[in-house]
Image (cartoon, rainbow, N blue to C red; front, side, top):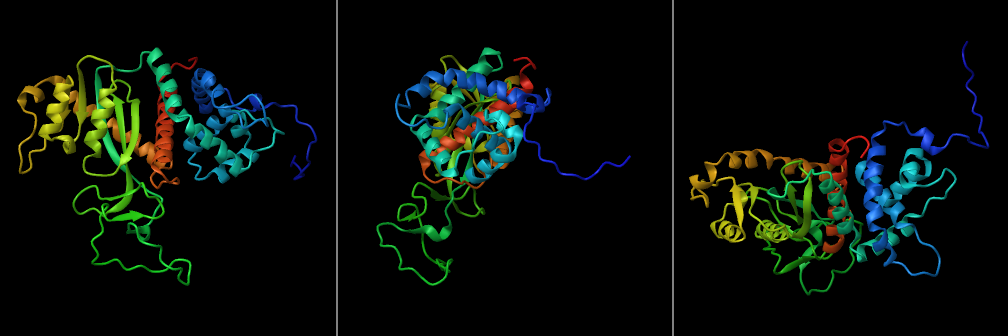
Length: 359
């Protein structure tokens, strides 16, 4: 018998959100890991708020919504709020009831900025790492470091000489600008849209772009990120970030896998002084490598060179799924916050597969 195509709106629903989400849905494991990290942050949340006034968005719900934004490549807070309004799966993950009102995008952004002041992204990142370390998934001896460029939310037209008055408005919403033949450097020019962005190109023959330098430190056992930071894009940022992130590791000799861009004798000598064995890919094109057979002859060197390619998966996920290939935020501090939170979301995705189903 053919069913009738009728649309009847029921006044009441007797099926809870918990029952609507299948038991084997991937977001269930993601929420367990996220909630465990948020429990560790609860005392820290209390220091960001006063005990009187109008209640704000609960920080736990706000961070769960940001995790969803990273997992589902939602490009803006406005679209995120739209999805929360009608997507029952998203409402269940965040902790909203079926009839609970959704926040306005402006209110959501203002509350997120409060978490920026409290360095909550770094604390959330560390809480996820503690979960992984408790499950004995982290290596404390073998690591990989690498860097990439994040394209800033600023155009080449905004890169103008410093300390000059702005140009008078021109007719049209997108006037043409001809800077051919001009010498433009970061010392003399600055982006009017995002002053913290730097004009930089990754290699010879590649186009120069306004960007930030993003850097990751990964442990080699499970491919989890153990440190993340964003620095101004320049020719020394990758090595500077490697020294800073490696210096924060626990004492004891460690190995550090790197690509050819880190094969600089002075940098390698500094690492050795820090009790770090540099497993760097040898750069022998028209030059002499900073390491020799005393390092490359060990089996661990080949393992580090194979494992270091896992960090490219992290960069690829953060840029494509996490939506940071083209930044949506301005300012080095906010970009660093968003990138660190994206690294935490990547760790959660990996932990979902590494941890047992009941963890």
